[in-house]
Length: 344
Ligand code: HEC
Ligand code: HEC
Image 1 (cartoon, rainbow, N blue to C red):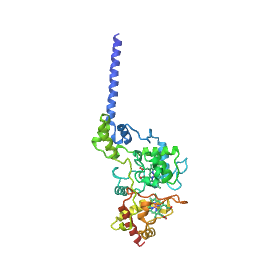
Image 2: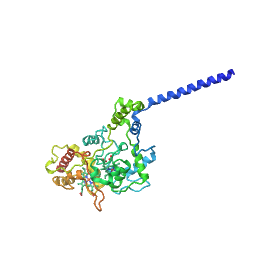
Image 3: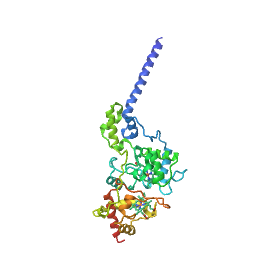
Image 4: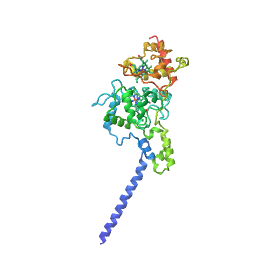
């Protein structure tokens, strides 16, 4: 009898110890959460009670690798090419493109590209695309019309449009599409990418204690710290009388644009029939056409690009106002003029 009581007492103590340890562990875990590393997706899902339509529930690294091959090499080992002409990275970077994510102006983008030696391209970066909710925004409706109707708010459909139309290729198979989405998930935004302040970090950690207004305010803070949609404004060819013909242009910026934009595709005719290099010939051709309204005119080719023709399905995507400013075109013209004058 005495022994039994003893045993009972012992059990109670054991229960208390185990229970306390579990509880304690829980609180410790909460403190140990590294807010920096939290996916933006998860935080927004908690706050809004809503999931992305393209949500990847569990990332699969094999699929990430297949997605990487499709994006960089144009096809996965076991598959066929998406496009005979292009790979996705001809027009899109896959890394961060501006120091602060909310600063997406062409000036900030050029500055960051120069610092990090990145290509300066017509498409938006794939980095963080997983966290966007609207695609082919604003003026893209003028170019693609009905084609993008179902792609405006669907990342999967946006990928399909680009596989078939931007790349002059084909729609992706289900497994290819899934792999690309897994690659995008791998390159999603984390809280550390958003430059939030201490108060917001605390709110993110204790989100369950926030009332609905506080939650809304936090969602706003988070969503305005990066771009959920990239604006796109089409500009016409600059009229002759407004052109400065490079006067006062920044030659160094122009040289960078020539190298990391134009030559990125045109060097040794990589994706086109037109070969561009840093020799006088290319430069003189452009100088000769500076007053035109034609495909060889810099002011025009940049704003209009080219269109696919029979027998030449590769076309040049144009640069929106957000991807190249008028001043940057003048910088390029200033450089081209310097290059044309070089003695060798
Ligand atoms: C020839 C150039 C080109 C190629 C090749 C290309 N794209 Fe694009 N893509 C664009 C342009 C230009 C846009 C316009 C919108 C933007 O990115 O800002 C775009 C937009 C997108 C968008 C919507 C982005 C947004 O934020 O609105 C997705 C998604 C996309 N492309 C995926 C792909 C994938 C995947 C591939 C490869 C299979 C690919 N693209 C190949 C030029 C290209
Ligand atoms: C994403 C790749 C890409 C980039 C970046 C690019 N181009 Fe192009 N460009 C093309 C393609 C593709 C064509 C279509 C020409 C063809 O069929 O060979 C083209 C066509 C042209 C043409 C017309 C050629 C003709 O014979 O009509 C000019 C001029 C030109 N590009 C200049 C430029 C300049 C200047 C830049 C930089 C501001 C630039 N390109 C950036 C891919 C690109």
